[in-house]
Image (cartoon, rainbow, N blue to C red):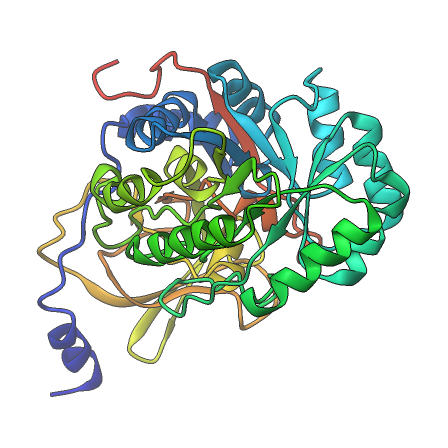
Length: 399
């Protein structure tokens, strides 16, 4: 058996899925022809669906969308219209809200480490609630103690999360009393706790444990006027494998939140769950080569562009040719590579595909979160077009 036959045998049991859902192949092909590639399509209806699913699954929680996941103006504007608030972390995100004539109501500034100029900029915008996680950051608010109320971010490590966000931020529980005492001595008002147990969390039990420990802090420090508990994000979505149903994922979280007193407002910072499923990308094959036993297809975007989430976010996106093929026959071991002059720019080196041609279109799904947001212009390739599909259903099958 030669190398090609061995690779075919290796992939023989793989099923190549149709990832297009209800989108019309013909309409997507027309869109690629009209706008060129690479192009990202963001679907308003999916943003709406994801947001509504989450508020239904967590009825006790007020949402503050993490703008960093997908800072597209139409996404932010639409979520504001739906009643969602915002998790701010930078001056740029504040300026995005300002450009959309949105104010600081229902916002929280969650970056634990800030320049003094960033604090002043946020206060000038109208931010009231800020997050800190250490004594040095607390000192920065001495001059603004009459204008702000602070939450302390607590460190809860979660090695099961795809991205462990407590590695970089968070106050250890053992250091929390000293930080609260320092704030009191400085006349700074502490009103809540926040945590983030990681991004793309496979199970809700880290959330539950963190909630329970925060409630223990509330009970053991009754001298503090606890008003806010921010449970962060981490709500998972489906990429190349099945993801949990959001109602099932949130059920244990809801149960833990039943112990929260009515005087405490519960916030969450969803980003990926709302944005991730909302976008698809159209790519073109711009070149091909036979290298050993594999056919290499070179696409016009890659891991330095929209698919940057493969590098920065540990994501693996579903990708498939737009053209219909008999996916049970003629499959060949292949590689998908991006366009840049860098060998790191490989999308998938372990994929089976039917024979394709230069000019064929690929569709990548689930690319809404941490994709456009982290895309670069490395090699001076321009970033992908971003189109907003405003609920008109013009790309749906049958239209």
